Amino acid sequence: MRTGKGAELTEQEIIDKSYEITDMLQQASSEKLNEAQAYHKGYVQACEDFGKALRLKMYALNFKEEQHG
Image (cartoon, rainbow, N blue to C red; front, side, top):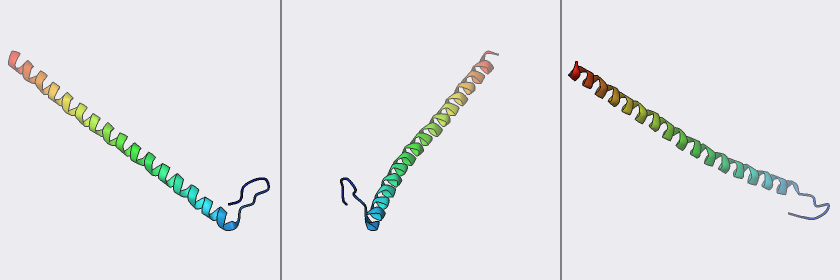
């Protein structure tokens, strides 16, 4: 690839550069997607854990009320 004032790229250099940029963007988007999927899984797990804890607490409160009248 030529550099400097008035440098022009050949057709093949432009094609090569476009593939390079495309690969970089695909890699970056894959990394972002993986990160988002990890956050999603963590959020879903937190919601499930919260629901479980809430059900256990409600069960304990109902059991306690039944024992004390």
